[in-house]
Image (tube, rainbow, N blue to C red; front, side):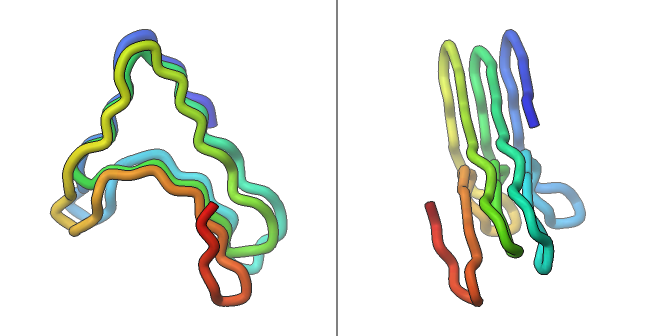
Length: 101
């Protein structure tokens, strides 16, 4: 997934369904293959109030990478109403255990 913006990319908060806003790439349980990268090219990036960027694999394969290219600022700030902190993560689940890379 590639997001290109000349000004600001903003992910903010939690929806009424309790899910955080953000960008996500995932290989599901039982699936085989690699997840796609999340690449953001922008002036500024804001991930706030519990929003997050995430690549993960629950199946067999590699999670994608998170690549941020910003010419100005990158800001991760705050907690969402669901209790999650604004963040970026790349997670691999292997045989019932969690490996964070």
